[in-house]
Length: 305
Image (cartoon, rainbow, N blue to C red; front, side, top):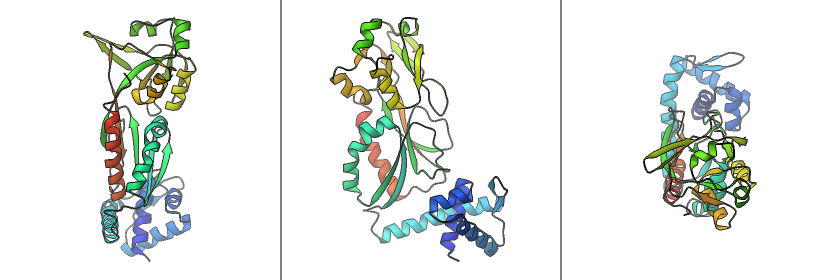
């Protein structure tokens, strides 16, 4: 039995909670993963996992063993990468999930620079605003706007994205120009609704001016849970938008969107990179975190006005 393969299989079963999902992430058959774990338990003479028809749970002994296994696997990876000079040229597959507007507007256009620096890293990008289970889906890290709700994750704050309020010229011609944010809560205006997939709640748009603070919800005719769909709805004239400035920049320049309430300060949107608490930060993940942090630093201070 290859002890390394057995430990890797066991660790992945613990992380995914399933022999089937572990096999998929390891590109192995479920039978092979099951046999590896069974042989490992036989060798250790300890039951590591409790299996039922519906669920796999780690035992107390298995949990203690898992904590040592992931450290050992991390040491092995570090040893291999140092010998192969991967400390200066990290390599391997990296799974990252990012919001669709950020991917389209910022991340993907900048990837030639990333791959010029790290040509041996293969990026698998999940592009969505949905809630991602990092362990269950074997995702190395996610980038998300808004406050994190899962406090068990390890996280780095990449910055705060400036926000603006926008509408199309066509919308303003039909409904008039609002001069105070509270007008958007009245019967004569609409916003485009956005619901966070991880909470199901609408974003509270907090704004400040001359000691006055308002949090505008407004009424909507359409609400979405995807950033690109949110922008598309605004560009179609379906309502007023609150957008990170990087999303609005090209549309303001082209005249498709007009800024509103320039004198009001809007609380920025925090942007986080998060990864599982028990996942070793590999060299390839570490260099990606550093690279995306530098990339987003400029966006956190730039605007369209």
